[in-house]
Amino acid sequence: MIRPIKIRGIEKEFMPIGYGCMGQTHSYGMKGAENKMTELLQYAKETGYVMFDTAPAYGPDNERYLGTALKDCREDVLIATKFGILHMPEEGGSMDLDSSHDSILKQVDESLARLGTEYIDLYYQHRIDPNTSPEEVAETMKKLHEAGKIRAWGVSFAPVDYIRRAHAVFPLSAVENMYNMLDREDEATYFDLCEELGLAYVSACPLAKGFLSGTINKKTTYREGDWRSRMPLFSDEAIDQNQVLLELINDFAEKKNATAAQISLAWEMHQRPFLIPIPGTTKKHRVKENYDSVYVDLCEDEMRQINEQLARLDTVGMRGSRK
Image 1 (cartoon, one colour):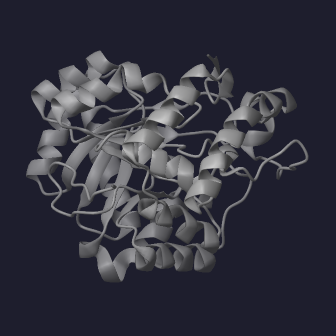
Image 2 (image 1 turned 30 degrees about the horizontal axis):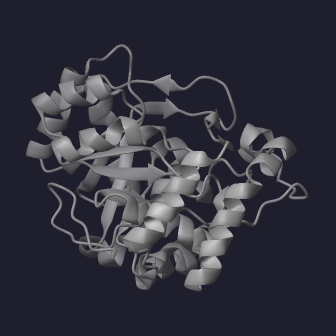
């Protein structure tokens, strides 16, 4: 049974699913209209979402949309945003990284202004800066916490040793990495770390960019600028190779009177009590469909069946092939 969760340093209790805002302005070859996206975010709040994940790297409007949508219910939600990437190209290219003390102070104030809030609930280092030590970053986070600008902090796609070093200076509350039925490498590394240090694991791409929803096939066309058109996961060969996984998901979806997306998300939430998937969508019906995965109960035997079958599959994930 899925139970509510809390993140250290943040008193809000919520069901362990969040709304990922990235797709509203980034990665899919479109930027949603402000009125439609703010209405969608408000609908997500009404549906039950408490945690909302954004970042300035998704374009300045991403944070602004979120701040506008949630301004009348700020105390009831958990806003997570990020620092460290000054520029993330739409497709390919190198990121402009800076997590130096002075840069972070500037970045946090800019995010606060765009969000229209006095504090950020969860502030992630979006990518590590090779020129700044984890100890220096943690010291800056401590100062921001003392100033009341952040309530908790975390890291995204950081090595385990980096996390340990940072945590020793000022405790983290969360790790945000990529995890889904196709990309399970973190089970062998980060899961034990999260349990040991009391961290939430926030799962980016829990539906593998929509692949695990079962709505994508070899005839699917993509907008210009949609990253998926060039990702190996969405090649004809990978789609053929991964059909066996979709069949497994669909079998359980039929048994549980659920959708493929709901089975994929419910599986994650049942995997560990500290897991929080953050699916994103720009479609209203998907907002509710994704959230309702919290009502899909997978018993211990069903989870065992799924995991045993997953272990035997030869699939292609966002990180490439695995067996």
